[in-house]
Length: 442
Ligand code: PLP
Image 1 (cartoon, protein in one colour):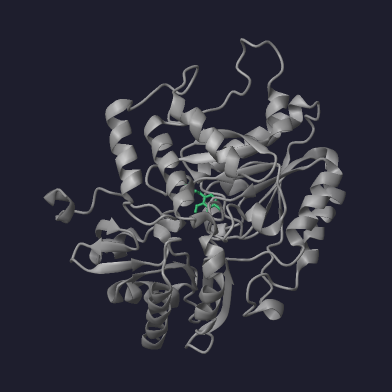
Image 2 (cartoon, rainbow, N blue to C red):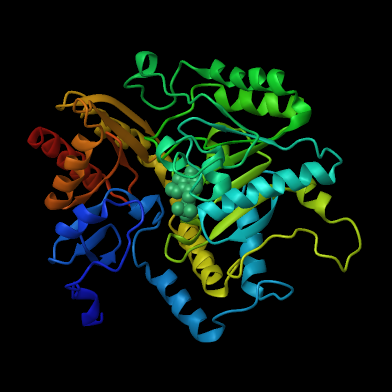
């Protein structure tokens, strides 16, 4: 490892950090300088157990040799190939490999570089598809309150987080939002899928009645809303959304940027819930978070609708300079190999019971007002300090880092999603740390 990695620069001012309290961070920086398997190394030489798979992405654990080698080899072999009107073999192989593990019928893949790009790509595919089919009046998009679909304009328009939207003007017009599915009064401390709230899907019928189906192109939801605190869909909810969309010719888009690639103990959330969308948005785990990459899966009939007209013409005026980049493709193939060899796409199912019991053992810890879990993801919701929302959870985050565990917080919710290689003893370590932190903070 080069020494440079271990030297914290004296001047932190030039870098404008994303989604961070820059001024606070720069007064007391938390720096990571290395990683291996389940651990980071901090700049002061401590081992930090990763309770969040980085940012919900390092599903196979850190610096896995197969992935590292694939990247190194590919960088030396073919560093870049133009993405438009040119190809390289790896990206075609990767698309085939992804289709092999995708839910039934999702058999074409469009590559991007992030979740945000995947979301906007999916929305554009949906709008263009409706127009190609002769249904150009279908321009309306439906998202959900407390939905997170990245930070590009399409994504924040269908997203439902006020802080991510309110500074940026009118956003896309013609967007409606369904209510979120979080019902604390009825479902608090539910283990797994909540019992109450499946009928919230009928809000979609209300929106259809208001605008008429002929104006609606697509509905986009995260099967499990991750970034706003692990909101698990109530029993029957996703199936009901599927039924309403099918009935009205509306496309159903699942944003599986977090739930994809084994997080719930199945390859995708669509598999977990037995509900197949028309378009599936992924990123993060596709390349183990190591190199930016996103992948949008579509059903054959959607793809094929574009493949008409003169063959010399471009069918879809969309794409990125780095779509299917050779090094990202190599990383993703090595990631899929690792998932396969180690059974990681289903390992969450083996550990889910242990994970659930461990998380719910925090029920009586100070400040806890709800605990939610599914697969290898979970949330511990804390009572907010009056007038200072998110302060308590942020204190927990800082203390946990001091104690050697990386957790993630959103508002006053602690979200946990360890790499899928986590061992039971490490689950205990994460939960014990959270318990002691909750006991230590005000
Ligand atoms: N969609 C969902 C559900 C996400 O959780 C995220 C990121 O956390 C995104 C989209 C955006 O992904 P990215 O940060 O790679 O643009």
